[in-house]
Length: 159
Image 1: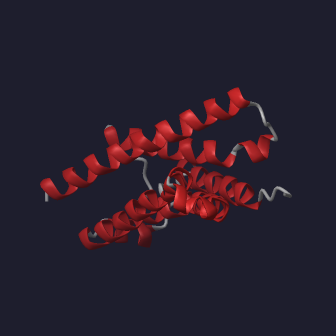
Image 2 (image 1 turned 90 degrees about the vertical axis):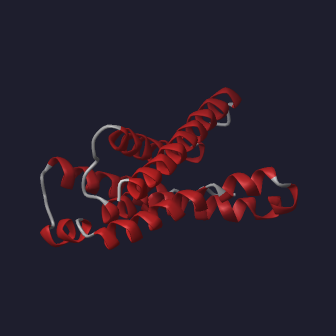
């Protein structure tokens, strides 16, 4: 099967653009004003949460026997959605936040970068590299999911 790394290229471009905007202090005032509105924050946050939950479907297609025939298709969807993650993040927030939100943001982008530099990209079939890569990618995903749930509770608790 021929490897297609277009999702990696898109992901790296979007991630780079996010950080150029962030560190270059390039601001879209209209988006920042929109992100201050409570309804917008909640709906865009729901979008990010659904994205994270949907990304876990790949795990289920690999683990649950009757869904395994969909794993290859799901990998492609997983990669393309992952490539779009910096854009989705930016739509929700133009800032990385503070405290646990900053940690969640750093892990979110580190995990996205780890996903872009997957084993198809580095062309390795080594079992140790695969297991190490997978452990970090899944561990980051678990931590992000836990922090996301904590964030949702805090947002609605401190309404």
